[in-house]
Length: 313
Image (cartoon, rainbow, N blue to C red):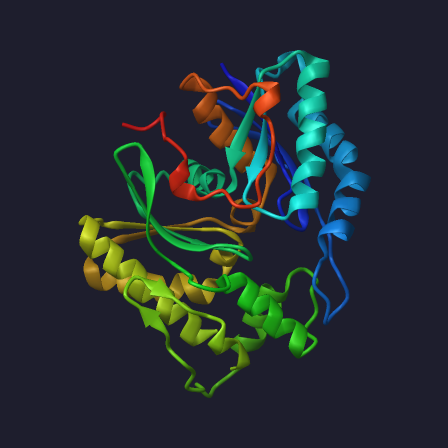
């Protein structure tokens, strides 16, 4: 059995998870929450992560019932994400790997989401909609790469929702996107908004002045196009915005019309967490990958399609 511990801290959540051959043994996390109307700055977020990371590490080991000697590999988020929080987590992961005498592995954040989604839902070879605060991509696997078929050309859908929430002073607890969803459930009038789909890409910056139904319609449209191109009969939604039940409902309608299956996870795994980094690290480690200490840097820009997927046929 292979046991991998994963450190995630690319944005406002610090999480550490442990995976053993596809089983989630532990997955604790903490969230940095700011007052209504405010976002989270990199320096403040990194300070939050420094304050909680050792506590979360202790919780992860205790919940899993393991000791450092039981760990085979230490995985951490290499990027993309916010610089200061990424550095904070990478520093701790490097230190832990050296103290424990374990190999180290840098993981792409998006691929962590994808591999966690595949593990939990058992989706085989889905077209993936990755939607979060920092990323919006439609992805499909082909020839050892997760290929990006479409993406935002300006801001991510989660960032769009977050900024809208700040403008109208919606609470950030537990998250602005969740609170927008609850308020939208009470609405009865559809407001027509700018609908900007450019080929396979989308633009959300202009729509920020207006918002939720139209955003999701645009995402469903480009996902359906990618499915048609790939001949896919599965859709997997990953990323923090993937928790939104209205997005899942709209995507489900499209899938039903095409005779396709929709896969999604709940807030335990769609929101940033350590287990997803552990799972991607598990796949990578089992295929022979490791990150040498001198190469264990971070990068704020790390595209999904830059990674060679050595663990899939």
